[in-house]
Image (tube, rainbow, N blue to C red):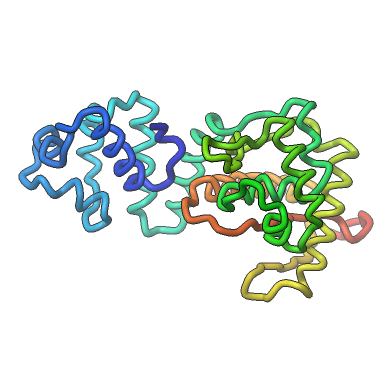
Length: 276
């Protein structure tokens, strides 16, 4: 049970408890209460259900109970504080600290042999869709699940390519799932392959303005006058935002739809002489 896969400490505790019970049926709420010196056997259940907050003073004992190392215990501290905080600025700061742990453990760099993933926009979309869509062999349903819809032959081709390059695989029942959670491409983002992909994704965004209902999309624009240094700071903020979006996505256990998020920052004027 990898705690770094969670952004909700209650969900982690529930899953960790289930895993320990499968290993030892004596691992019950009463056993936990005794270990934590709690008067009520139901307290831990109330915490998991959201009826009670987990006191931070109990975290070291919980770390021992669930055999967490120092880094995992520190992450649990952050998770509890993040969940309980009602201050937006504090939550943002805590999320950044959580992201440091998550980024180091969940990203896998793609080898060049897998760069074919970026040759068609729907390769990316289908790989992500397979997190929620139960697909085994109905290529028509898979093709119709995308927006815009693709051809049945394109859906079949996408599955064949993704399986061949090792980014999806079938489970024991034959249903396909992504192999890795988050992927990074290293320097490939400077290649012509990515330029072509970004062009097609921008075109999808353009079409969505007319084809997707406003309640199902969020498209906004800013036009600002800034310096090179401020542009660099904004780029850094956008990089942090992308990481946050990825983290939220990977921890969304109720995900049921694939979204494309295009973030663009580009000049619409030439450099001019600044009048002081």
